[in-house]
Amino acid sequence: MITTKSLRPSLKTVLKASTVAGLAAVMLTSGLPARVSQSFAEAVKVEAPPVPSFANVVDAVSPAVVSVRVQSRVNPVSEDGSDFTFGFGGRGFDELPDDHPLKRFFKEFGPRGDDHSERGGPGRRGPHGEGRLRPTSQGSGFFISEDGYLVTNNHVVSDGSAFTVILNDGTELDAKLIGKDSRTDLAVLKVDDKRKFTYVGWADDSKVRVGDWVVAVGNPFGLGGTVTSGIISARGRDIGSGPYDDYLQVDAAVNRGNSGGPTFNLSGEVVGINTAIFSPSGGNVGIAFAIPAAVAKDVVTDLIKDGSVSRGWLGVQIQPVTKDIAESLGLAEASGALVVEPQAGSPGEKAGIKKGDVVTALNGDTIKDPRDLARKVAAIRPGTTVDLSLWRNGKSESVKLEIGTLPKDDKEAAKSQDSQSEDTQPSSEQALANLGVTVVPSDDGKGVTIASVDEDSDASDRGLKTGEKIVSVNNQEVKSADDILKVINAAKKDGRSKALFQIEAENGSRFVALPIDQG
Image (cartoon, rainbow, N blue to C red; front, side, top):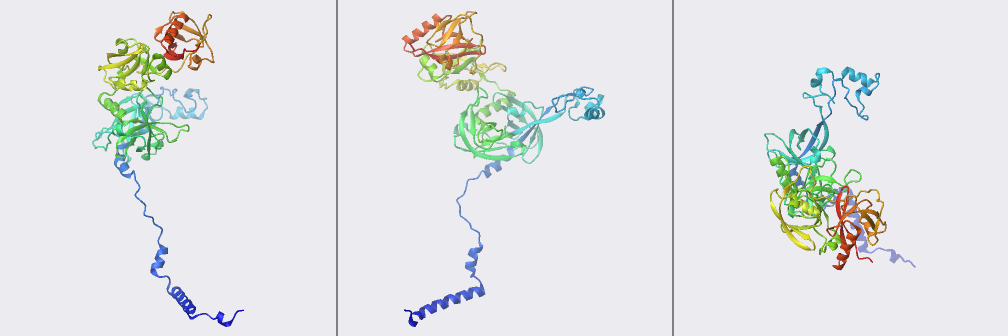
């Protein structure tokens, strides 16, 4: 039962209610207190720790990075304009119908007689009879001296007749080609100008580590100075572009037009020169390759000094040492470079290097593989005498030789033979069942010719093909199936499970290790 007493508020309750009501009235008439209203007016701010920035590096190096525009000369036209070509399949002027509007136009306004040298225009003769310059490519580059020497890629300038360097402030300056090297894809240009150019230096390649931050600066897609960042993803990459492949892999966004541009460390030093990208689509996928500073520095120095690069030359065809080959030769590990054939008259032949030798060290430095040997030999000045360590006939030997000069049109010091040729099958056969091949004597008396290969055999798995020749086994010449079997039996007595076959095809020789422990 509710009583009157239970509904009567206490004095304390009345006072609390009056106080709250009074405060509400004050706030409605005079607004919120200044301290309260200010807390609602300010935007949220968070005190964050400082974040590393590339801005200081970019500010310092950007003036040294340039865009490179390359122009080539188009083909000159004949006196009657008949050599003028159009962009639809290369059809000539005279191939157009007589009533074609383009033919009438060029007859009326095209080049005539002696005024070729004055009128210019696309496809017209210049003052010396050559065609007009036309932009053909563009890339990036960077100054390496205050007097105007700059570095770019060979593939950027290789077909050029004239070169223009565009500074980061938009200034355009003519440049001339000092030298280029296709084997490392490097080139040097020179700008002759009175100003002193901002230039950059080379990084110490030995201190560049996988995981280091790098900044790429260049001219992607012709946009001009663009900066991207990433890390060194890997070192010593071989992308199949040549025997001296030793690229840095970076994940910074590098695209078409970045070629020849530098990749910097956080000290503003050049750690590499962007030269290639892996891209199924033609755009950046986070895998780019840069020529290391150590390689570039030596090549650039030679180009500035002589306009070309002189490389050491051994003159032997070599291939990798696989585990099977190492076992067949009695080597403890699969390393070094296996000599397939010394070239006639080469330093290697003169020093007595033989096919089947394995080059294991150069001046005491261990040779890892053919690429390692090629790079080390190329870096030696021609005329220098070196010590080569060889593995021959199951033991180590040493020879001295004088490094030669790599011929410009000759084979490189290292070359792998990966392709095989096919020929017609000979008529008669002899069986070597355990190897999976049948052979017959060769017509020229050199080795034996493979008549057939069992598709399920180790020989087939290792790439032996009909028509190829077996010229030696374990570095002993063979001329019959009996010769092969004698060498194999001797190897078995020595406890070896594989034998080393020298295979000769139309495009060269190679070594293949085949199992011999069956049966």
